[in-house]
Image (cartoon, rainbow, N blue to C red; front, top):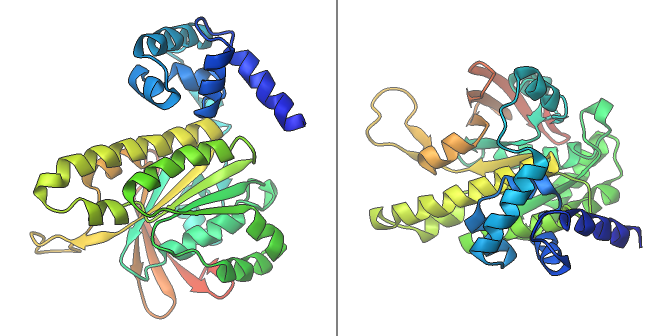
Length: 322
């Protein structure tokens, strides 16, 4: 009953926007637009398509929302700093990795993990799905995790091991991780919309896509399909960023690599997705195998942290320091 009351309250709030009645408010709610700001920052084409309303109506609604939300005005640096105080962080399980990332995986942005098979990408996202449920003072966000699984990599047995090692109840931990198997790139993109719906029911603070590019790589083959692939990948990345902003959540994506034949010196491996993924991801971490269960993590890109490198280990308990 309480959940229904919240939805009614949100719908009433949207009805304050000029041009929005009860019917359109419901369409906007169903499409994942739960507040005025989320509508104000949307493009008219996307709003019209996603909410199934006319383009002229979408333009009018966005214009009204922007006036109400004061969107489009310049802000001072201290105002942005105040907004940054709301950013949350999830511990990786390793102090070394946390330091590399400035305290852990950051909300309101996308973190990309790329590397060869066995470099630890899936292990890290499993650990994050557990750690997000920890109390804030233990490096968590007391929230749920969503996982879009494109390669059938999720293993509940691994979650049980990791949950026990951090003192969480394994069954309760599993109940707070919601998994959807994506069967193709179109389905993968659709699941981000479903994730927005689920985030209205639960306190979702982490969205995982493992792996981001597998379906796109398999379905769009050859140079002739490259432009179409990059266009769809670009929309997918922006949808993920929007999820991170709307729900103050961490978005973790894993990415495959390929060998670049024109590199004669240094490491020839390059992540799939090119500049589209590179420009949208806030943090990019390159993972490499080392001896035994040791792994090397290199921070390749960050808006405010220096490039650096560290080591961690993958144990039965999860991601830990050497």
